[in-house]
Structure formats: structure tokens, C-alpha cells
Figure 1: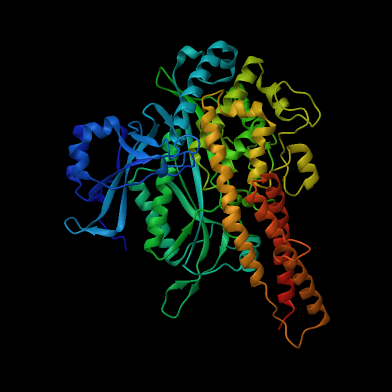
Figure 2 (figure 1 turned 90 degrees about the vertical axis):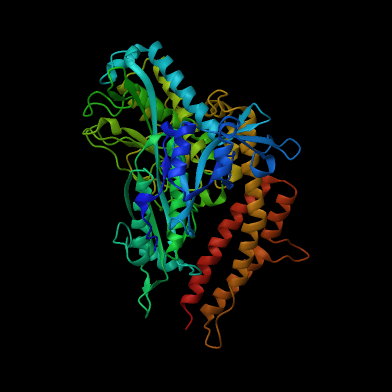
Length: 638
């Protein structure tokens, strides 16, 4: 399976080979590439896809590379921007990144014996001829503004160079470089197999799957995925089992069945835009390869209630290329045993933490994403970081929101790991807003002339202490296990209350307008783009809640049926009586009282989103209670 001669296939066209003559030569040498697709990226993170025959692309290449191709507002998700009555949208190629070839493994070209490929060209969306819109333009503009403003700050506050090893002044710097990377977790299963939550939960508690050896088609698909991605030039680092999953079953024919496993794959960092593009490609290849082995993949953040969800930890770094050719990490201290970070690094970390309520809507924009962020599943629930017990002891605290990654043997690897994103997060917007927030913190730290020791003290402040930048009634650092060593009340008091619904998450923009300003880069992300994103998120939340989540709750309630017979004890009868009453409260209307499902549906119909959010929280709690009661009820039945 997938036994193609990979050495004969075209996988990418690098950024330095986008001239017309290069493209014509490359496409002529690879007749298996039969189509071209311009990949525009809207505010929701959806990418466009079409099939332009290669011959037509070659004939019209000058025009297409200069003026792009046209789509319309109905093809992309740009609410408040590209509406149906104002929907002219063009897609202009991004010449600065690698272009990848997407292969259809089910369609084999008879001439070459290779799968048919489509050259996917990343593109910027242009609305009404001159207004660049969408996630790609937002990331490009945010990165550009970050680099420009950081150079200005370094020039204005030269004291900081005494804490940067390798550079003496801003005049030594040729350019600022932003590097990012993501780690992709996902679930894989055989079609039609349903999860046994209790079995999965027990396996997770016993850590029966974490980093264990893969078997059968999962192993083959994982190895083949890594092999193919290396051909794309992604520079794979590893693939392994994650915490979730159960052992598959071997059938009488020697095939594996009842597969239900969680995996993770990692690859090397790249520039911010290339890193986001790479993640898109990786997910497509993962899905396509695993499908060839009869396996379904899901990138949902929380596909199974009560079991570990899938994260996509996002790494954020900043370095400088010096005029002498050397590279310098702009977060790392000169002496690792003495300081955690230099002032630029501390400021960047503080910027993310202080402004996270305005970043979070870009990270967790769906009910599914918020379902993952629960205590006990190695997913962050608090706005807090860990630095380490001392500069000589790097932290590996997996319960915090932002981790500091550092290694004295490799100073260039110093970076931050944001642990809250998931595979459905729009990585372009996550990276953009994080760097905008980082710049806010860097500017505050450098303008105040703070030293690393002073900034560490700020990071370590106690609730109620005043600070030059961070909020008085918050704490931002903990070296403890946030899940086990604090009560829920303590976490809420010290680190802020985590949003329970998408509506609550979006309210961060209402409560903290100054943080919205920082996260938008003081207008780098245009107000209309912020409004467009908010409209998309709330519309998607309300629609999914009304048309998918509430009906699914009803189906679940209907599935909790009477199972006892004549041998039932009073204990069984009492359990069933409690279950029945709860089912009625959730889903059954009467003349005197409406059910929770009806009240939630009516709130959404009337656009009473605050009430709908409250009803969603109640329903989540009641459904979880119903599941627990039914498990207890079944355990006592023969």
C-alpha cells in the first residue's frame, strides 16, 4: 500500500523557485502533477481548493501569478467583509513560502504509475481589489509589525544588550527572525467502532498507551506518514503514542480491529508563516495516509468525553541574525545558571499572560476546544506559567498555560510553549495575536528599564501586590501542580476564572478592551477583521449548539433506557427513578414547565446569548450527572 517511487514524485517547490521559467521546467519534469490550486485562507482558517489544469496554469501563468484568480464571498468565511452583495474576492499567490503538492492516492496516473498531484499555492485574499483580508494577511502584518517595533525598542533602550549574549547593540543586528512550531495530537480508529469511555478512562489512568509501541496498521500508517512528510522537507522529529487509547483486537484473519488510539507527531520549527502552512499540510497528509490503511482520523480537541483530548502545543521564539552571520536568541540570558530569561524574554512572556483573555478567543473558539480544557487531562485551565525552581533547573510543569523551554546546552532553543491550542485552532491567528501581545509586554519591560531580577520578581508577585505591568489581584507563576495543589476556588482567585462557553470566552473582549488593543497590535489587525472574527465565532457557536449539540443531547437521553427486569432490587429501582426524573428535567416538556433543552433552544432562537450560555453550562452539568448515574445503575444489573 502506497508503494510508489517517492523519489520520482514532486513534493514541494521552494520559495526561491517561483520564477516562471523554474515553474515551467519543474512541472514539465513531473507530469504526475496535473492540477494547480490557489489556497486562500479566510478568517475562520478554512482554505480554498480548486482544480486548475496544469496546462491552463502554464498558459496563463503571468496573469495568474500577478493578478491571481477570483472567487466570491460565498466561497470563503469573511462575515461583515465579503457578504453576498459585496463578494468580490481575489486570491494572490504568496511567493515567500514553499508550495506543496497534494496527492490523491486513489487516482493513479497511468502514464507515470504515480498518484495524481495538485500543486497548492498559498494565497492572500483581496476584497474589492485593494483590501487584504483573512488569516494569512493578519499573520504577515503582525509578524512584520513585531519585527519593526522590536528593532525600534532595542534601539531606544540599549541597556538590554548587557543581558543578550553575542550582540552589543542594535547596529549588530541584520534582521529579527520569528520561529514557530506546532505539535499535532490526533485520534485514530477503525470506522464504526465506538468508544467505551470507562475502558478508555481506565487505560489512561494506568498510562497503558503513553509512548508505547505501536502495532499493526497504526504503526505502518504512522511510519509511512513520517516518511512521506520527510519528502516534503518538513524535517520530522518523531511520532509516538499519546496518553489516550486502548489495545486493538486481532481478528481470526490476522487483521487488527477495534482500534482506538491517540498519536502525536512533531517536526522542526520554521518561520511563522511557513510553520502555519506546514501544519495545514501535515494534517492533510496524516488524514490521507491513515485512510489508505482503513483508519479514520479526527483532529477534534475533545472527541471523547471523559478521556484526554488532543492538543497542538504552539512554540514561539524570537532570534536575531547578526551582520557577522551569527544567530542570537533574543529571549535567552547570557548565563543560564543565573537568570531564566533576559528582559526581552520576560517582557514577551508577561505580555502573553497579561493579555490572554483577549488571545483566548483565537485559541479556543468552539465548544469542543473548551471541553478539552478541564482539570486532570494535562490541558491548561489557568493563566499561569512556570519558570523552574531555579535557573539551573528547567521547568517541565505540564499543568500551566505557557511553558518556558530552555536548555543551557542549546541557548538558541529558548522559547515559549503555549499549551492551550488544539488541532482545530487557527494557527495563523494564534501566532499573530501571541506576538502582538508579546510586543506589548516587551515594550512595557524595556520602557521601565527593568532588569531580569526585577522582572522575575514581577512574574512571581503575590495576589494583591502592585506591579508596573501585571494586574494587582492576580498571580502569574506557579511551580506547583495547578490541578492538585490548588482548589478550584483558589485557582479562580489567583489566576482568573476560565470561560466555560464560547460566549463567555468572547466576553473577554468586552471586559478587557485595553487587552484587545494590545492583541490586535494597536490596529495591525484591523477593527473590521476583529469584528469579522467575532461574528464568525458566535455564529458558529450558536449554530452548532442549536443544530448539533442540543439534538445530540436529546439522542443521548433517549439512549438511557430501562434495563432492569423482575430481579431488580430496591437499589435498582431507586437509581432508575433518579435517572428518569433527570431525563425529564433535561429533555421533557410539560404544560407547566419547559425542559432545559427547550429553554436553551428558545434562547438561541431569540439571540439571547447570555441566557443560552448559562443554559449550556447547566446542560453540560446535567448530562455529565446523567452519564454517571446510568453507569452506576448498569453496574448492579445482571
